[in-house]
Length: 190
Image 1: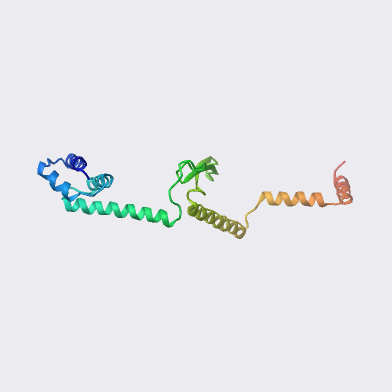
Image 2 (image 1 turned 90 degrees about the vertical axis):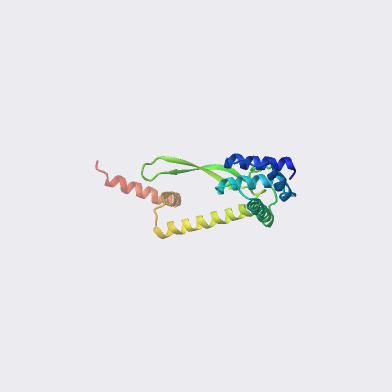
């Protein structure tokens, strides 16, 4: 960091901790933080403001700078290991967000009968291929479990029953239909 950037960091810390920083501190901090990127120092500054009670020493600040650098390296390694690289701002699905909104899910509340609408987001198959594959596998597994649960519970499937009845009606021979009609008319009171 250059001296002006170090001064900004010290000013931010002094304001947050309500401390007056002596002018000599700028030289010491500048020497100690030489080579640290300004954005890393600002992130470390914000982290320290959130966790420390008192104005930090240079050692505490450098320790937090190291933590910020480790966190950034870990995030970058995770993105690289997933084979994803960076999201593409011109992606037609997600626009660089890695997730995109799909058709909303509508579920009827069993108690009130009210239809509730829930947002549904899916991982982008182009920007997040690993998450997309995991999402597809999870959905297939969830559907298989639900299908198995319905079969075990012996739930009444009205659509299936109606389809079976329609199939039987269309398969019935014309002679059988005519005979059934005559039997029905014979039982009717005149």
